[in-house]
Image (tube, rainbow, N blue to C red):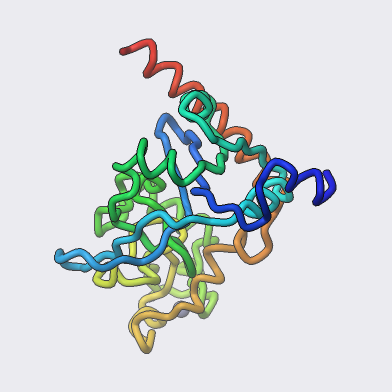
Amino acid sequence: MSNADFYSQFSSEEEEFYAITLLGKDGRIIWATQTHWVGFTDSQPRKELREPSRVYARVGKVWANLGQSFVVVRSADQMLRFMVSGGNALVEPDLFEVGFKEFLKPEIAIPDGAAGFSHSSFFEDAAFKRVPNPKLRMRILSRDDRRCRICGRRPDDHLDLELHVHHIRPWSRGGVTDAKNLITLCNTCHKGLEPHYDMNLFRYTDDEKLSPNVKKAAEEYAEGVLEYRRIARESEIEE
Ligand SMILES: [Zn+2]
């Protein structure tokens, strides 16, 4: 689609919207939007509070380039249709701010990997427990090839070596117990980490973000939409 064709559905490239994504994953609904920082929680560890931000129409172009569909929502009817079919939508600000006030309140945002935040609905329950459960621990150890990601040593070759599954962003600073924030380190490297918080370690856990695989992302998006529709249909039957 040419730029002129693409922007013909908007008043200008700068027309403002809320960009909303509704997907399903393993029976859960996850939603995403652009957010900005509005404050911190009083609880310890303190967590960031963020609120949805408006974006320009050109965000639709970004989605299109990633092989993701989107709809433009300018009426309550279109909004209802979007709530049933999921995926991406650019929602007119008036419609969103009036009809979806509950989404506009500040929400706890969880640091996700090296940069950015995700809504808590993105994470499994295990992410909010300090200690990784055995299944998650095994997943990290096998992802990391059962070796320390700093020195490369493995217990098979070094008798006194212990492997630890370590939070890259510390739990005390709002880091979650999630694959992207966990890494395998040996006892020596773990003790030697100075400062105890080394952002560089994220490069070992978040390869996808460094070299985004557009085809895979588009497939995951399509699967997420199908799963969302399945969940939406089921909850309709229950009501
Ligand atoms: Zn090591």
